[in-house]
Image (cartoon, rainbow, N blue to C red; front, side, top):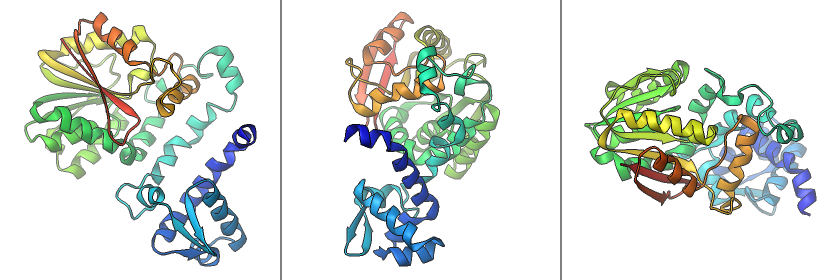
Length: 324
C-alpha cells in the first residue's frame, strides 16, 4: 500500500488543486452540499464532482453523510476562501510550473547532487519569488506573528533579509510603533512587500533595500535582523559569509532571528522539516535543511556566543536567536 499510495501520489496533488480551482471547499463551507448542487455552482460535470469529492473524503479533506459533503475542521479553516486563514492561493507558488518542473527528473538531480538548472531558484531576480510574495502570506503569518511577539517589542531598527512578502518585518512594525523596517530583496519582490506594508498601515516605516543580500550595503545600527527561510538555499560557507556581513551591520547588543525548517539531529524527524531537504535538493545548487547544531556552529564561527532555539506554535519552523 505504501508503494501504491506513493506511485499514485500525484493524484492527491491534482485533486486538491482541482477542488481549490473549482471553489468546492468554499461552496461546501457555506452549507452541506450534494455533488449535483456543487456541480451546478462550479459549472462542472456532476459525475466529475462526485468522484472528486469522494476522493477528497477518502484522503481526509472532506466528510460525507449520505450524499452530502461537509468540510473537515482543517479544510474549513485553511481551504474555504471565506476563512481569514485561507491558504488555497499558495498553490500558485507551490504547484507553479517553475518549482514543480524542477522535480521532473529527480534521478538526474540526485546524480548531480543539486538542481539541474544553473542556479535554480537562486538565479538573480528569479520571477518565482514574486509568486512567492503574493501567495504565501497566509501560510507564513503564524510564524511572523510569533517572531514579532517574541522579539519585536523593543526593536527600533530592523533589517529583514530576503523579505519576500515582507510580513516578518511588517508584523514587527505593527507590534512596535517605533520600529523602522529595512527590507532587502529583489526590486520586483519588494514592490509586493510594499503593497502589504501599505495595507497594514506601516508603509511610512517600511524602507526598501533592493538587490542581493550578498551585495547590498545594509548600513549599520540594526538591533534586530530577521533571516526567515533564507539560509537553507545555500551551503554552510555561503551562510557563514552572510552571517559575518550581518554581524557588521548590527549593534553590539543586537540579535539575529532565524526562522527555518530545522530537522532533528537524525535528519528524519519531524517529517515537515526533515523532508524539506528534498525541496532544496531539487531547487537549489547546494541548499539543505540544517540542524540546530549546524546553525549553532555557523553562528559560533562568526562570533555569536549566545544561541537559543525555540519551537514556533502552529508552524513546522523553529525560531533561532543569536547574539554576541
